[in-house]
Length: 268
Length: 173
Image (cartoon, rainbow over all chains, first blue to last red; front, side, top):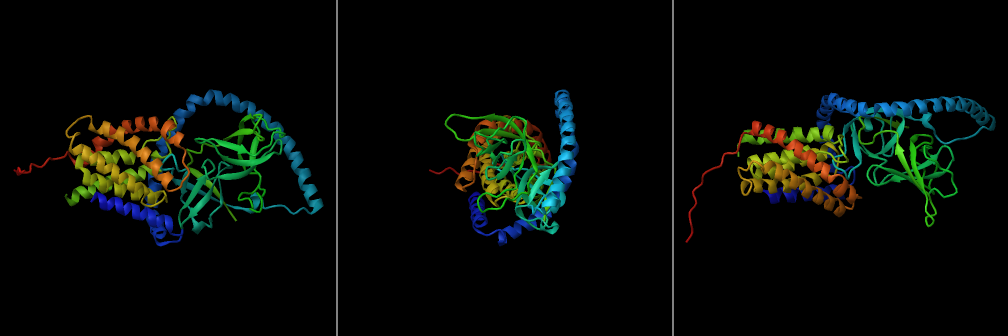
């Protein structure tokens, strides 16, 4: 019996691996996921109070220090907001005067807000499953945000679900820009849940606290998957060595990638 | 093997797989996460033996892979072997031992992590061995041990304790 089940598991893995995403086994899996969907939504709703309670305790412990930090940050942001409003008005006027043709921006995308119904099953997978799929217009490579911050891209879609690979996954790579210095690099996964901004040369002035956003630029002939200007996180450390031509920049995401419960998918 | 027992095990595994993907997967403590499915498979295997354990592992793995839209059969393969091994332990050395649930869960968590790492490498998927075996393993073992007693008690309440059959054995020679 054990031998039969083990052999059956291996056969399933082999067939699943070899067939295309539209193959029969994938269709059966999608149908099964559709059946499980209401149960997953129910389980997620049941767990919400307990997760909120856990979050409350966690928040209470860190509240005081975070409060002080946020007050200081708020003051700085108010100052920048006033400067940016003036700059934005001038920017729009100049674009109109030049008849400037730009890349698609966030305003060109429709937003699909949805719930996370399955979290990474192990520490190897940095993927989540969301309760919206092709029925909502979601396609592979659609950007996924949480609280306005980039968290991943859609890598697999069924009619009612989609799998989102997080930016902390080792297969993820996002062309990103330092908003302060304009330095462009490639945001990739570091060890654990950390993020690193690679390929930034040593002549760029990148500082701790700088905001990192999507660059929206091409890498070679490949178009960027993400529109420009989506916040990703802040620079948490900058280092450089004599031998490496690039800086070592660590980036911390604005959101907790291991605790997502609702996301927004950008659809064109 | 009664139909009622099979139905109870199936229900238990279904609930465990659902709660694992929807709830426990999101809770991380010190870099590690609990594996409710593995603990539930261990409980069933100790209470009902290796055949039930392997069957429960297979079914739970299928539900997990379907819920997470992961590679079908991957989790089933690991949990089938885990369920069988724990069941054999429960039928032999660990029979009627009070420490059997805790010891089997601790050992199987470590072995499961190693086997899972090996399987991901064989399938060509990128893995961070340091995270899996150094950062996350000890917290995962501790969290699984915390879950063991309530999950085992619940499984025992639902399935009932194991009744060992007395069978006649004819000596050869």
